[in-house]
Amino acid sequence: MASHGADIGLLTYGTRGDVEPFLALAAALQCAGLRPRLAAPGTYASLAAAHRIPFRPLPGDLPALAHDMVTRAGTNSLRTVLAVSRFIEPLAVEAFRSMHAWSAGADLIVHSFLTTRAGFELARERGIPSLSAQFFPAFAPTAAFPAPIFPDLPLGNFYRRLTHEIVAQIFRRGGDMIYRRVRRVDPSLPSLGPWPFQAEPASRPLILFAFSRHVIPAAPEWSGIADVTGYWLPGIPPGWTPPPELERFLDGEAPVYIGLGSGSAAGRGAWISAAVAALQRVGARGVLDLGGGDPAELRLPPSILAVRDLPHAWLFPRMAAVVHHGGAGTTGAGLTAGKPTVVIPTSSDQPFWGRRVHALGVGPAPIPIRRLNAETLTRALATVLRDTGVRARAIELGEQLH
Image 1 (spheres, helix red, strand yellow):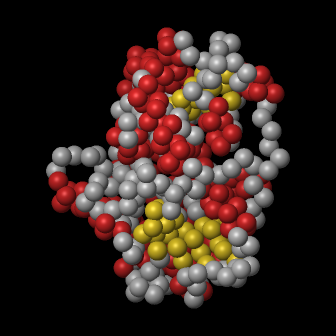
Image 2 (cartoon, rainbow, N blue to C red):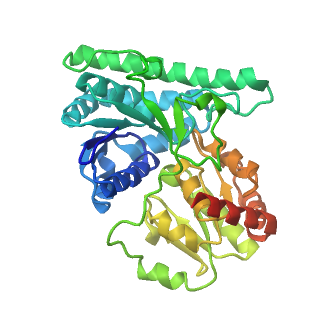
């Protein structure tokens, strides 16, 4: 689809987990002789710079969105949609104008979940193709499982397919409403075309599912409309070196990684207390990833080290097990490293990945954040550290994902 030297526009919006896969894709495109450039929230400009990817900042305070999704929405699908809509609508005019200017000169646009409508319309106006990059199963209905933000109820194939249609309709109608309001303010933006996945075949974007078939097998209904590509995991940023304190800490017995992602500021004291108590009860060492917090603020026992924003590609292979929120990319990084996994979902599609981890036999059932305490986490840690079957299956899956 793209010739050598082609200009590839990568368009994403969301939290860190929505941006990092595009950094991995950009690096691969550069190696293939193409010229990728990324438009994403300005919050992640330094992350793009670390990976040496040309970057266009988009407006928005993404840590605020992550906090809102955890504290207000949680794992409720309707509240998740409302939280995202509340966040995006005030920024929409400025964001669309920035995207419109950025798209000039692109030969291909690759858009993500929240930029589906914008990316498709920009490509349509420019007369260029587009691709839809999705980090969880979206916009491709199947009876194999329900849409990730719905519970897996025993209601059969009709229910499973219906949930996918509901998600697509809610997303389509909400996005179209915002887009129409933006065009009333700025009529120079492209007019609203067909829903991308109901467009004529020549302009319909192929969906690229950036996860592994070993984690979610390709559904029969996806033939011709979606490809399961494998995970897009960012590597270690060029020139990055680990902090000396961390290297010294890792000289001892392999620790357990515990981090709850972009929304970890919400209820931080509670989850850290539960993590410290559970690690001590099972006699394990730990690395606590505070996300945006300051490790110096905490007083921890010598067996536990607080860190922030370390590359998973470097850190996870050095862990005994990983405990996290169940973001798609973090889940992929832990499984690729061959590590048994505990998922503590806090919002959106994270319960889905927790269920997949459990179904694959590489971790216990997910622990909803409201049920996280020292007792529930102790039981989960005992499973991933002492169950030889779970550990063996995690190693085997990691080998398949490489």
